[in-house]
Each structure stands twice: as structure tokens, then as C-alpha cells.
Image (tube, rainbow, N blue to C red; front, side, top):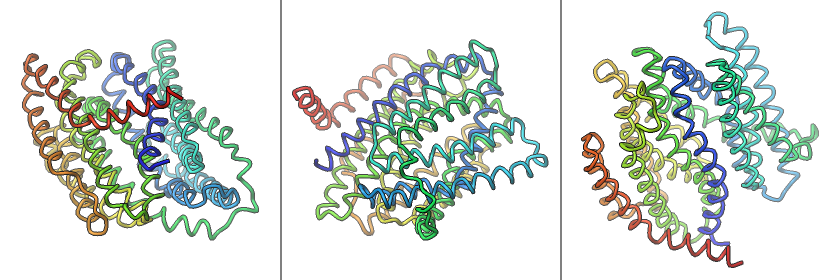
Length: 468
């Protein structure tokens, strides 16, 4: 199987599950925004945000290390067992320590709904570990099913709690926790984890080796938290939880876009790591990088062009202020995609320190810009600081990666994307539906023309599969 076919196959498998769950979750936005106040949604979003801060501090990113080292032991069940057994025990010890510290510290912090923050983090420690375990075993379909269970169970239980049982914010908390627990149960049984776990397989040397890779990822993830999530903390502090609710809804649309990138990133990371030493590596990376940029640029611009028509239908009018943030956040996410595509080189090289350094620099830029602007331009400070941070991070990683690996985007593609992106800035805020419709048509033509080769390849692949 060729590298491109392998990448396309893995991505397609992962996309099917994600597409279903995203559609379900996305079209239930009207329910969430109608039932929950901006304050309630802002509170829920803030606690989820804090959990993403706590997770790397609790699990030390050992789940990422598990996946990366399992790639080196594909088909070697004994070595995989040593990795899994050691890291499962470590994760359990770390979770227990987290629970003890949380119980001791919480009375002084007086966190509202603290039980959710405690349980959500512990569940995520295990679901993250088992997700990467399944992925490391090469079970892309099972990984996809787990993601589907997580999203669909969360959505169904949220609807039951909010619309039927009328439980409000507490229902949202409870249903989210149950959905994570169901996902964990599936992962345990589908991976047959008991066949890999043995007390005799636990090795301190394995923990030391994986930890040397994973622990430098902690500041990287904290930096990502600053870039992605500190916006909400700053907004909540300076502007209130209602403003955070508006900003959170604005992020729903960019999140759909970035979630599809996350699907591809799973197979892209694996493909780059497995084929990093190939002779034609640089040619493959440049060609694939250009193709992926064309795809994601078209998707980004397409979502922006559709927003004037989609946003009023899906979102309750009390969240209307979020519309102005979406274009800025979408462009920020496009640069985030580029950052992620380049970071796969660091993963392949097992160079976690470089990942951390570049992420920390972006985090500093993000929080600085945000604090300087928050009192002057309100919510816009959050979206603009996110855009500036990801753009800066892209430039840093682009320059650094190309010192050792030739991996660039073709110039004509960059120029075309700049022209379309600039046009959409003018049409997005003009409030003239006819002009916005013309912009949508132009964007659609651009998307087809720039990705025609990929569309043809996709059609051939589908025909060959059906032919068989």
C-alpha cells in the first residue's frame, strides 16, 4: 500500500465516524442555545476549559508517549504489553494523587460544581490512554467507533437531560460524565486490554523512556491551553460569563473545522513517523503538504462564505454577537492546521522539546495581546490574539522545520488563498446578501479548481472499491 493510499484510507475511516457525530452535535446547537442562558453555557465551557489545563498536569502526556512508542513495536505484543502495563499503573497512581490534592485544595478555592471538574479529568486520563492504546495497535475503526460513542452518547444524553428531564446545567454535567464513562467501557472491552496488562510486565525503564518523550510535552500542552483556552478565562474575568458564553458559541464553528483536521492529523502523524526515513521524503512531504493546505484552505473559506446564511438559522439571537468573531477564529484555525502539519516532523524525530519551545512562544504572544486589547475592543481581543498567536507559531515552525527538512507550500497556492481570504473579509461584514452569495459562488469555484486532482483521485478510489 502506497503512503498516500495509506494516509487516505486511515483518514477516510476516521472521518466517517467523526462526520456523523459532528453533524448530530452541530445541528443540536439551536437546542443548546435556546434552553441554556449565556451564563450557564459560559460556566459549563469554563469548567471544560479548566479540565484541559489540568489533564496534562495529571497524566504527564503519557498517552501521547504510549502511541508514539507503540508505533515502534507494531506486531510485538510482548513489548506493547510492557508499555501498556507500565503506563496504566502510572496513570492510576497519578489519578489517585490528583484526587487527594483536589479534595485538599478545593475547600480553599470554593469551585462551583467542583465534582464535575474532579471526575471529568480522571475519566479523561483513562479515555485518553485507551484511545492512544487502540490507535497504537492500528485499530483505526475501533478508534473511530470510540469517538462516535463519545460524541453521540454526549449528544443524546444532553438532549434527554436538557429537553426531557429539564435538569439544566446539572443535567449537562451529569450527561457528559456518563458519556465519557461509556466510551471508556467500550475501549477497555474492544482493545481486550486484559490480554496486554500484567504486573510482571511493568518496567520502570519503560516509564523512564516514555517519560523522557512525554514530559517535555507538558509545557507544550500548557502553552496550547494558553493559546486555546486562556481567552475564556480572560473574557470571564473582564467581561463576565455571559460574554464567555457568546465567545464559546462563536468557537463552535471553527471547532467543527479543526476537529476534521484532528482526524487527518491522527493518520498524518502516523504516516510521517513510519516513513520519515524514506529516500524521497522531502518530495513526498512538500507535495502532500501543498495538497493538504489546498484542502483545508478550501474548507476554511467555504465555512466562512456560508456563515451569513447558516448562522441566523442555527443560533439563537441572544448569541448574535458571536457572528463577528467567526471569520477571525476560522483564519486562526487555518494557521493552527498548518502548525499541526509541521509539528508532525517533531513527533517523527521524537523531538518533544522543539514542540514545547515553539508552543510556549505562541502562548506568551497570545496572552500578551489579549490582555493589552481586552479593555479596548472587548471580545475581539480574544479572537485577534488567537489569530496572531497561531500565525506567529506557524512562522516559527515553518522556519525551524525547513532547516532540516524541505517541506513547503507551492507559491501559486499561497497567492490564490490570500486573494480569496481577503475577498471574504470584505464580504463577510458587508450585510449585503447578494454580495455574500456571489462570494460564496466564487469560493465554491475556487475550492473545486484547486482540489480537482484530489477529487479525481477520490472518485477513482471509490470506483475501484465498488468495482471490487
